[in-house]
Structures are given as C-alpha cells and as structure tokens.
Length: 273
Ligand code: AMP
Image (cartoon, rainbow, N blue to C red):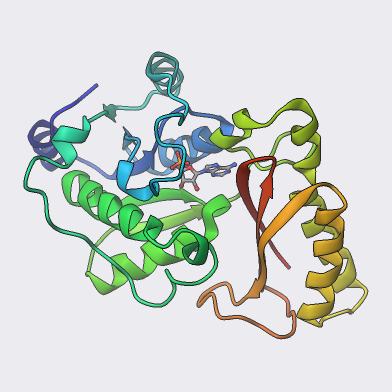
C-alpha cells in the first residue's frame, strides 16, 4: 500500500507494460471488483486507488458517515492480485495552499449536477490528479455512474490525456438493485423500496418494446411506479448516450437515467434502451 504521491508517481513511471487503473472511494463491493477484474484481464499492471474525496460531497452530504473498511478492501484487492494500492491522506492530495480545480462545462450542470452543484468539480479534479500521478494506459469506470463516465471521458479528451477510459457494466444484487456503498444506509423496508429504481427502468424497457417512444409518457409511468414505492424522484431523463442531450423520444441505444431519494438516501441507476 502506497500513501505518498511522489512514491506512487515514481513507481508508475518505472512500470514496464500496460497500467490499468481503477479509482475508488473504498468500501469495495462486487461493482468495484468487476472493474478490477476487467483491468487484471486487459493490463499487465493494476493500480487501485482508495480515497474518499471530500470535495465531491457538499456540506449537507454524508462525508463523515461514508462507510470505510480499509483492511477488508486491502484483503479483497490482494486476492485479485492487484499490483499497487494507492491510499493517500487528504493532506497528501490537498496540501495546505491547494488552489486548482478542474471543471467541464454544461454536461456537469444537468442531471446529478442540478442537485449536486459542486459534485462534478470535485470528481473531475481528483480524477485528473490521480491520472497525472498514475498515468495509466487504461482507466476502468462503472456505467453505474453514467454521467460521471461521460464527463470524465470529455475531460480526458479535452485535456489530451493518453489514457483510454473504459466503461464497465453495472453490477446488481440478485434482486436487481445496483450495488452501491450507499445501500448500506437503507433500513430493511427502504431496501425493498429501493428496488423501484431498477423496476422503473425495466418498465421503461418494456414500454419501449411495445413501441411507446414518448419520453414524457415513459417518464410519467416510471414516476408513478417510484412514487408508489415511497421514492421521491430527483430526476428521470431520457438522454443520448454520447452527449447526454435530452431526447423527446426514445431510440435504440439511448439511456434512461434516474435519481431517487429513498428514506434519506439518494440512489442512482440507469439503463440502455
Ligand atoms: P466509488 O467508490 O463509488 O467512487 O466508485 C468507484 C467506481 O466503481 C466508479 O467507477 C463507479 O462507477 C464504479 N461502481 C460503483 N458501483 C458499481 C456497480 N454497481 N457496478 C459497476 N461499477 C460500479
């Protein structure tokens, strides 16, 4: 396990062969591990970072409560034969006097950016820093955070990073709930209600197969299902998968993205049509 930026940078610059990188906030579950396996399969060296990035949480969010278990994480990553675990402190990533932020226009102000206005600035900044430290050939990210994936691909393209960012499929619990560290916050009854995210997406797919293509109509049906299961809709949007532009009508290959508050926990999910 490496804690220092300069040491991680030195190691990575001396690595022979390809580097696959998986950035995480730890408290690993099968979703994270699927990214590590994809990296292991494709690259000769695998680096995983664990850093709960304070700047992607807003003041009213759950930074202090965010679940952590570094010993278990290290054990899981060792079993998957990860070469290096980068586990820096906050002081190491943001030393006193830190002043630089990376942002991406427009696509960070929609969807999750609307209710979390400073979130993507935090995410883009930390991932830019990590990419500069590790300089990976490939970076593996989950489609679970679909907007994040598109935003970071845009950043990497605009800032001329050589790294290829690979999106990996969403890993779900047996009953369909997308795996997330935040699922831990759900009470047993809320855990059942939380199935409404996936179920609403399955419903949208079913309606699309019946040739219903009006986004408004599909969103209305999904909202009903979610509200009937005690969910509060933050957003449901039909978007183009590449640009995240709103679509008035569904078409093959588009994505539906949802964010729903269950109890006090905000959960996200999405599905390709
Ligand atoms: P996090 O630790 O929440 O920052 O997530 C680290 C990476 O794991 C991100 O690229 C996420 O998109 C990905 N990830 C989280 N949950 C899942 C999941 N259920 N399936 C696939 N990837 C996931």
